[in-house]
Length: 267
Image (cartoon, rainbow, N blue to C red):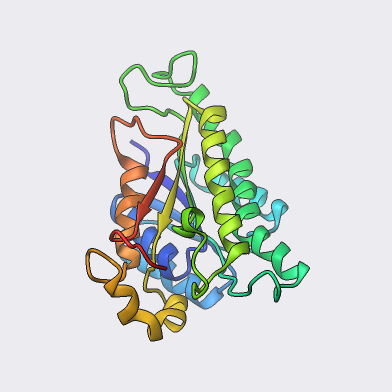
């Protein structure tokens, strides 16, 4: 059986890196998309150390044409695309009275439009894979219950998509709006692309990353008190869920929003 192939946006560090390594450990070759060349090279080396192939693309996820090019190059190099993780994102700590129009537009573009860019790029490839699958039925599903036959997609939303955050939250309304948009996009595309492609959203709470550490360190004791499991999350925690969604068989999961927050009630 050919190796499975994944694309991870924002894959150079933090949650993206953790998920990329988790996928590699489960047998995926991984294409990484980010704007951080040194970190891209480091994570690619870690994937290689796990015995899997890596491709790196220094690209801005807001760029629609770049997303099309990444998908074409990955498909040309490895012959298929089985999983897309839309992980790239950026926080926005400004409230409605402080934020500029450009800052709002960029928050939506990085967190939400990027998901559209990469889904639009990989969906035709995944649909073609289903059409070429001899085990697929006329609707693109699989009679053996190992559906979907085309591929799977997961997009990183946030707990803030449900809560909107609080006044002390690291990211405020623009970020929450973008992440809530991912939930609507996920539900609509689950209907549009099923049964050939499964698509889900992941909604982390507070996760300790290189970026997040600087923003949450001062509030960590307060935050931990409001998490039932008594700690902040890690990229590896999120990776466990990502790998599950990418590999579980038989698969009957699509259009869902998975909260991974240790049961957190204050953010």
